[in-house]
Length: 90
Image (tube, rainbow, N blue to C red; front, side):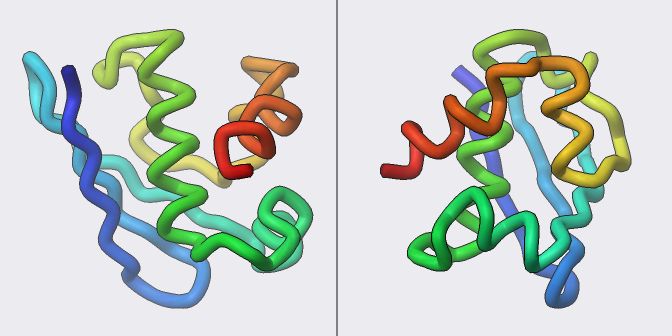
């Protein structure tokens, strides 16, 4: 089981460390408008990022996750992302 740690660097940038068989570090940017769309403003962005990594880790190893990306990129690879993440945060 992987451990996901999210560190806020600024209002829209987060550093995510995933400790699994290999430890990886990722830089994720989250547009405030996109975060609001997914959370209805009810969930801290750090939690959104954390759960987004949980979503990704259910589908691929941490070593396959991009090292730097904007959060909406997940939906390009996994079309069910937005629907699923809303349910995961509810």
